[in-house]
Amino acid sequence: MLLPRWFAEAILLLISILASTNAAFIGVNIGTDLTNMPSPSDIVTLLKSRQITHVRLYDANSHMLKAFANTSIEVMVGVTNEEILKIGRFPSAAALWVNKNVAAYIPSTNITAIAVGSEVLTATPHVAPILASALNNIHKALVASNLNFQVKVSSPMSMDIMPKPFPPSTSTFSPSWNTTVYQLLQFLKNTGSYFMLNAYPYYGYTTANGIFPLDYALFKQLSSVKQIVDPNTLLHYNSMFDAMVDAAYYSMEALNFSKIPVVVTETGWPSFGGSDEAAATVENAETFNNNLIKRVFNNSGPPSQPDMPINTYIYELYNEDKRSGPVSERNWGILFPNGTSVYPLSLSGGSESAALNGSLLFCVAKADADDDKLQDGLNWACGQGRANCAAIQPGQPCFLPNDIKSHASFAYNDYYQKMKSAGGTCDFDGTAITTTRDPSYRTCAYTGSANANANATGGNFTPALGPVSPLGGNANALIISIYHLSFLAPLALTLLLLQPDRLF
Image 1 (cartoon, rainbow, N blue to C red):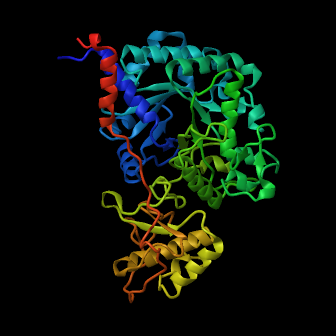
Image 2 (image 1 turned 180 degrees about the vertical axis):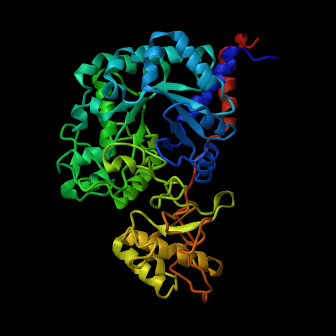
Image 3 (image 1 turned 90 degrees about the vertical axis):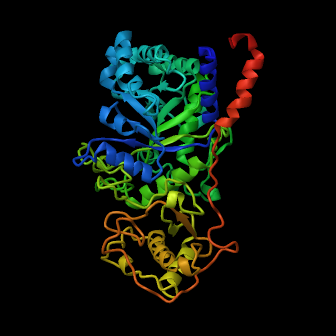
């Protein structure tokens, strides 16, 4: 017995619904403006080793799409701004694009979204009048290929189309773009897609002339006297990121659209800048992205939409040395082209009680740990714990960044790797956490790293027990929620009961 097409489409729709209710995810953007671009196969191997499950490409590079075949990684492909005019004018061009860049790779490559252009309204305004037509033509081509349930279509927008994003409750889209934005929102509503937003607290902070504190942009807790509150709704905003996302929701509401999810297609923080870019530091970049990951993984939305998790793509995977403009433009990556980390970053968003797939566990300081407690832990590890702390001394490979969290992480890990077999744990009075992410960066190699070199430490020491959790080991293991396809059975049965005459 063959199932009719309507039933297959209903199953796909149910899968889509279940997926949309799953835990929020963190993805990465993959730019290509770098001199020594790794091969597609190397990129995929690296992504899999770091358990990165979602990526965004700025085009539909065939070599990259082939490399993603037979992986579980979800891929967002891009229609370039230069391609929009032709696709918007000619449905046949849209069909050709979809057949060549999407249909040809599915199901082997898990393409789940198409970003039509990037910041079209502000980057290429002459294309704006035809953007809605391009979106519709791409969607119709997906329908013709029976891919419209699997692949969503949208267009990433800049925060610049909302001239006054704070307070969020009064934010509106620029009147000059109302017609185009209205057409976009109507398309998203009709197709069940989402609003793609490029939201950069870095720029929100650096262009605000001191109005907002740096801690607010970095997701750090603010004192009671510095709380950011929307005067109209009295909602409290703990981060500029949340305020930016809420500004988009309120702007959509001003045009009478609601419940269109916001997906942040770009956000991040540069790790290095010019003399006039004081906020672009490796410390700030590490703080922002680690706190961003924790924020997204708490699975909640912004204050006005608490039940709408914020799926987010970090900008970006690699530093792009060929980009023009300010120094910071070339330093947004979380990795160097050789695959080493620019700074320690845990893309898992939390601790893990055991290594996944046999991966080695590293012990690092918690991002929100108290500095005084970290200092105590560092002193203990380098003293009684007998960790080799030579690499974090001035002039040595792991001295920079010169902050307590970075130094404590190195010392904690060195102790943990040597002493865990003798009962040593990764706790340090609640200031440490285990991760499968290798925290090595630049020339600083952590003990246990697969790429450890002369900077890594080793040797045999008399067993010593470090500070332990009352539960032993790490008491705050990350719990990952996974939905199962078995849930489809009762849902599919419901459909059959509602329409039994349509089965045959």
